[in-house]
Image (cartoon, rainbow, N blue to C red; front, top):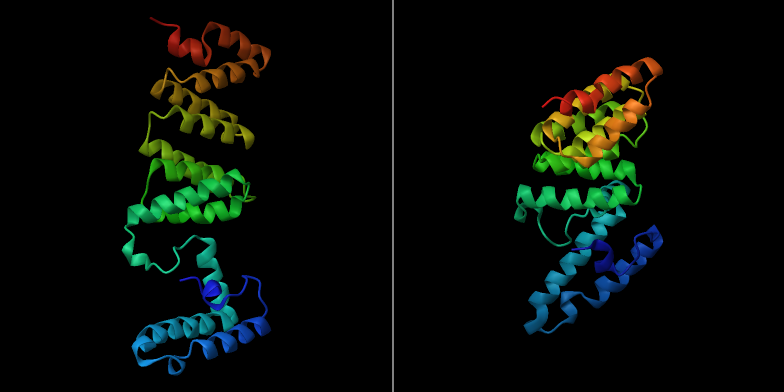
Length: 224
């Protein structure tokens, strides 16, 4: 049940508009104005109008209700009807959509709920991607990406994102270690091999010479 639709007002309606809508609807839908045969249905409708008004007229309750709408809680459907798996999937999809729109903070909130209801590697992965985009959440983002890898240790895309993130924060040694582990876990992953070539190409002359002798790719694939 969407309280705003019930009262036929917009999400940004004023308090005055809210009271005006309630007076109009409560009068037109009052059970006493209906014949006996329609009174039960009218009472249900009237109760919906009263509940909607009582929720939205209070500033704190309205703010809390607005947050449930932003998080995509199905209108008119008790949350208990959803399984944890369904909730996790819904919040994951919501977080992915917000991430694509660069709404990083709200994406994090949705993805936190996704992994709360059901921990999945995919949920932790997208949670990490969103967190590293939010100022001050870099460490949380790295931990989330590492959690995704722990749950799906052969997924090259997860390692690649972790490597790029560590490089972004200037953690070169950790990035190299993560890349090496990724190449060992997913040796055929093209993205990881490209990262390895780029990382070797970015080292100083001394490291380049060492890389020619072995390097990340050479050390892993040079020996037969």
